Length: 366
Image (cartoon, helix red, strand yellow):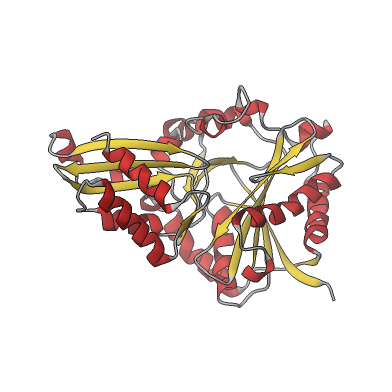
């Protein structure tokens, strides 16, 4: 008997709800109250969506967004980088039992991406999967990507599939700063050299109906399932209504921002009583560390970036144990590794030792 999954096509939603509805489904799935589900919606206006751990003031041109009427929001729990979404965005959230997909990160990416690849091929575009998480056309350009990592719930796997129906790359490069940071390690002169869209590949704008038909078939073929049209449960709606208050707040948007994180120390920094230093680590993911020191001790610290982490609050917990810690690389490395071990913590593609080295890198600039 073919396995059946629920498809939620929510139509047009506001920029905050765009990621809050999938969050609500994740919580319901964790409690075992809903079936395996794919969530799809379209933002009703242009928006920049920043990753859970990013410093919005450093990653987004906020003044230009305000001038152009582009909303800026933060997604809860899900890492990665800042992205521009509009009515041409096609993002699918796959929220399923954790034993349904592979556990290993790279195997999970490869398996999850099968549906994206099949959907693209169903549209008549020749493409292939290229690790870590891209689907590339014959022209060598990216037409979509898969993102996923562990959730805080051992029984839930959460995957996003992004397909480029049409993308305003010029606008994205203006609003997201620095525009090409993620492409420095690739053979491309500009972001445009690396990205293509369904419209460009086919020479016309594909209708939402045709795209949904192709991607729906792709999901069913890739995972051996049958999708049925479903609706949000009352519990999911109520969770959404509660969570959207947090997700739309200024405090949440500026969660990883120096003006909020260091609000009590700003005057001390200006007066020279605290020293500020910053270090940026760019490996497979970007980590940005800002540290405030008072003589030989860490007074405060902020760790941000486009990484994915488990548990969701591991950054907060690492920051907490390092406040008041001596500026000693051996002690810091030991404390960071201890916390990761205690939490069974993980940052995708970055070892605890690399994570610790980034913090030490900031302190060596003091």
